[in-house]
Length: 140
Image (cartoon, rainbow, N blue to C red):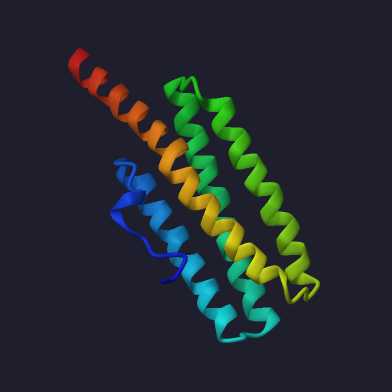
């Protein structure tokens, strides 16, 4: 089974966040397919850059939502984003330098991180955002 198969187990029940997660899974699948097909280093690098750009946009979006909601888990959640940002940059640099092992390492790391992060950290954020929304609707 592919490592980047989206399923409902990754849903956090915040539609925009879920759409962003699905896109990251799709990009991971695209990278996995390109690596399996032994695509050129240039093609692999293009996919990795697009994936990192999308992930960065997603992290920034989540962090903006957390700050706006005064989410108590913000620092913990952001530290996780910062750790993956560093790791993606490091592995991306190795891919740019034509390290043939780096794409496989990136795929394994990102698949594991996405599963763990969406299952716990993002689900907690999703619950907090939904609860805040319910409270705001009750007040209005």
